[in-house]
Amino acid sequence: MHPKEYKKERNGTGRMTQLQLENSEIIVGVDFINNKRVNEILGNENSRSFLLYPGEDNFNLSVRSSSEFIPFMGENPHIFILDGTWPCARKMLKMSKNLQELKRVSFDNEIVSKFLFKQQPAPLCLSTIESVYTVLNLLKEGNLEHCDTKDFLLPFEKMVDYQVKCMLDPSTQNYRPYTKSELTPKNQYKKNTQRNIVFELDK
Image 1 (spheres, rainbow, N blue to C red):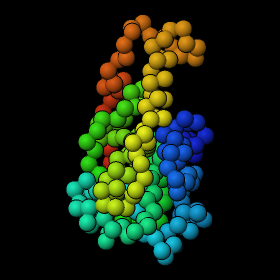
Image 2 (cartoon, one colour):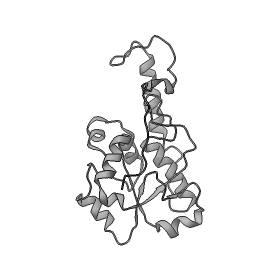
Image 3 (tube, one colour):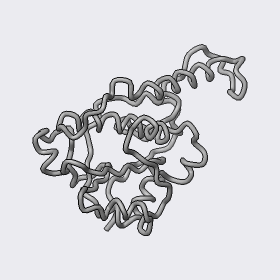
């Protein structure tokens, strides 16, 4: 998790994910080359480590046969997820050569983010908890996960509903009242600028 996310976002979806998911942990930093805990996990001879990040050379969980999961990932894999804004995540990866060297896993996004009040760079982008939810369900198909994901997104959905209600209620303190009784369509929140998403690091 990027330090900015850790310090400012008390209700961030990275924290929410960690609370929902057993055997998960948050490691804060930007450059993880000399991070003791990260290198301890990477050096574990009984587990393979992977990075959840888009790119050309990756193991796409959405299109691979479930029978390929265990041969590729092993029976007890560690999956690193970069939690932060897209610019922060790219910086974390650029500075962390040990994470750059990991094999990558990815998925094809077939859902639209429910993060109504936070603009994502592109439709393919999801919040951390939505990404983990998608990955868990795919790993379940490959018999690498057995956790119940039925209510995994429930805290996130309730948070979004609460935030939207506060934004639309002019009597709510700490929120700027809206003149309309409906939420502006999400794509209108974007600034009038063109943004590009870079998936691969320059070599």
